Image (tube, rainbow, N blue to C red):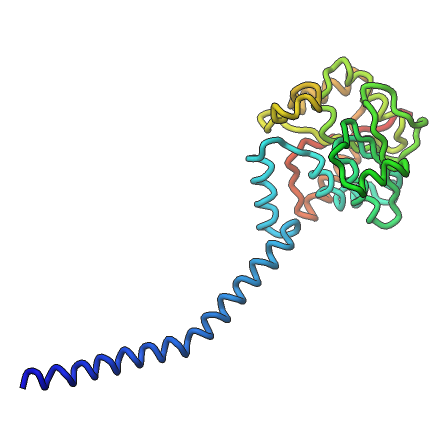
Length: 260
């Protein structure tokens, strides 16, 4: 009798297991579809990283934890804010700093905007598009410790990033007045803050010296010493535009008036 009772139990267990498997097989297509949809959503978020929270978070982490800190990429992120701040006056742009090719290319995609660049360092590793810009004269490779190869007020605005941090006060005394000389509407400076990452040791040969991250008070005093004034109206408009566009800079940004 006991052996006869075992067989029905096995058959019942097999039936329950078989039913569970059938139930699982029926639900697995729905589960697979759900996983595919969730994956697709994350891919879309990742692709639009520059304009959503995930993208901003990823951008912030790469800047804070990276091997070196870049304000040149910050310039590209700030272009909509700059355009909204300066309006129609921002028409002829000169960008000064490393990776100027990418900044100029992005400005050129803006309507009614002309752009040129000065690359202070070697571009041996530059891509073919960048080298083509150099051949056309859109980008110039020049040491910014010396006078810039442009006439006075050649550009409406000069934007400089990742270049002044590597200059000593001795050369800043010459370079900043040059930036103001070739601009008619103003100079915008993107510079690192104290405590941010310096250049890697391997890059020192390229830059010549370690980056010196200076405080905003240091820069304010220096501007006064060389008779350059901060553009209060531009600063206010930039802050308003940044607030409307939910833009939070990772670099220090200074707006200077040109020489009159």
